[in-house]
Image (cartoon, rainbow, N blue to C red; front, side):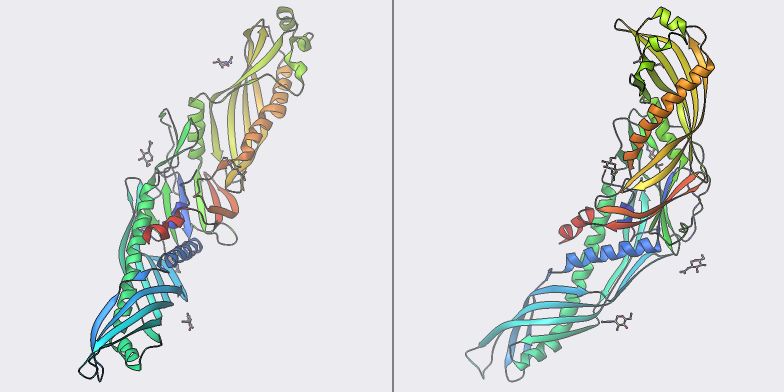
Length: 493
Ligand SMILES: *[C@@H]1O[C@H](CO)[C@@H](O)[C@H](O)[C@H]1NC(C)=O
Ligand SMILES: *[C@@H]1O[C@H](CO)[C@@H](O)[C@H](O)[C@H]1NC(C)=O
Ligand SMILES: *[C@@H]1O[C@H](CO)[C@@H](O)[C@H](O)[C@H]1NC(C)=O
Ligand SMILES: *[C@@H]1O[C@H](CO)[C@@H](O)[C@H](O)[C@H]1NC(C)=O
Ligand SMILES: *[C@@H]1O[C@H](CO)[C@@H](O)[C@H](O)[C@H]1NC(C)=O
C-alpha cells in the first residue's frame, strides 16, 4: 500500500493562505496534523533532495568580448560551469498568513569551470589563446520560497507563490592563466556567474515544486484494502495552518467495493492541539470512530463476517454423542453425528472510542448444525451479545491490538431439539468465545492493518491516546529512502 497519509509529509511545504481557523469538517474522519517538528523534518528532507538535484548540474556557457589594456580585444568563454557542492548553514520553515515560507540562508557553493580565451591586437598579430580551469566559491547564498496548498476536487494542489535566490559574494581562484585574465573574470564575469547560479537554483525550485505538485495530484483518492473494501483518502477542505502546525483532513471512510453507502453520525469539533502528552511528535493522526464503524458496516454488508467452525480444542463437543445425557433429544434424533457451528455476525458491530480504549459491541448468531449423511441440518440457534474492549498498539507501520472479552449474554433463538439449558448454552458459548473466536480474531489482528504510509517512511516512537470519539496517534517519522522522493532529483535534472 504505497500512497498515503504520510505523503503529507512531502506536501508540507505548501499551505493555503488562510489565517482563520476552520470548523472541523463534517466529512473529515481522519485528520493529520504536522507539528513544527514534523515541518522541520520535511523541510530538511526536501532541502537534501533539492541539493542532490542541483549538485553536478551544469550552468550554461558564458561568453564575452572584453577590451584588455595591452592585450587588446579578448574573447573569453567560461564553460562546463558545474556546481560541485552546496553547504547550508541554516534553514527555517514557517507557517503564516501568506503560506509556508522556507528560507535557506548563509549557504555556500563550490563551482568548477573551464576558461579559454583568444585575442589578437596589432601588438600581437599572430593571436594568442590559452585555456585552463578555475574554481569559484559562492558565499552568502540566500534562497526563499513561499508555497500554498489548496484542495482541488479531493486532491491537493501545490502553488508556488513566490521565490527568489540571491548570491551574496563570489570569489574566484584561477588555475594557471594570466594575471589580466583573473582581473577580467572578477570585473566582467562575477555578475554573470552570480546570476547564472541564481537562475539555475530558481529553475530547480520551479521544477521541484511542479514535480511535487504532480506527485500530489497523482495520489489516488481511494486505497484498496482487499476485495471487499476501499478506503476513501480524498482530502476534505483546504489545509488549515496555525503558526506551529498544519492540519489536513481526509474523508477516511471505508467504502464497499460494491458501493454500499455507509450511514454516519455527525462529527463534533476536533480539538486541534499538537500536544500528545510528553515530548512533541512530528505528526498526530486522529481517527474518528466512524472510520471503524464504516469498516464494520462494509464488511458486515459484504457478508464477510461468517465462519463455519468444525474444530474445537475439545473436539468431542462436536459430536452428538457427547451431548447424549445433556440434550437427549439431539442424540436421539441424530445419534453419533458430527456437528459444526455456523457463526455469523447478525448486525454490524458497533465501535466506540472512549477516553480509555475502544469498545466493541458484537452480536453473533451461533447455529448448531448436525452433519448427517452429507446433509447439514441446523438444529438450534443461539444469539450472543458480546462486549469487548480493544487496546490499539503500533507495531512497525501497522496498527494492531488485542481484543478482550468483557462480558456476553446468550439467548436461545430457536431449537428443533427441545428446550436447552441456559447454563449449558452459556458454558458452550463461553468455551467457543474464549478458546476459538477471540483467539482467532486476535491472531488476525496481530498482523494488524498497515497504516497507509508512503514506501520508505516509517513511524517511530508512536504513542496512542484516546480522546472520545477520536483515537490519536502521535509519532515521529523516519525516512529510509527509496520512495517517491527519490524520483525528485531524477525528474528535475
Ligand atoms: C552560520 O550562521 C551562524 C549564525 O546563524 C553564524 O554565526 C556563522 O558565522 C555562519 N557560518 C557560516 C559559515 O556562514
Ligand atoms: C502562535 O500563536 C499563538 C496564539 O495564536 C501564540 O500564543 C503563540 O505565541 C504563537 N507562537 C509563535 C511561535 O509565534
Ligand atoms: C470520498 O470523500 C470525498 C470527500 O469527503 C467525497 O466527496 C466523495 O464523494 C467520497 N467518495 C466516495 C466514493 O464516497
Ligand atoms: C450459516 O447461517 C446463515 C444464517 O445465519 C446462512 O445464511 C448460511 O447459509 C449458513 N452457512 C452454512 C455454510 O450453512
Ligand atoms: C504489517 O501488515 C502487513 C499486512 O497488512 C504484513 O505483511 C506485515 O508483515 C505487517 N508488519 C508487521 C511488522 O507486523
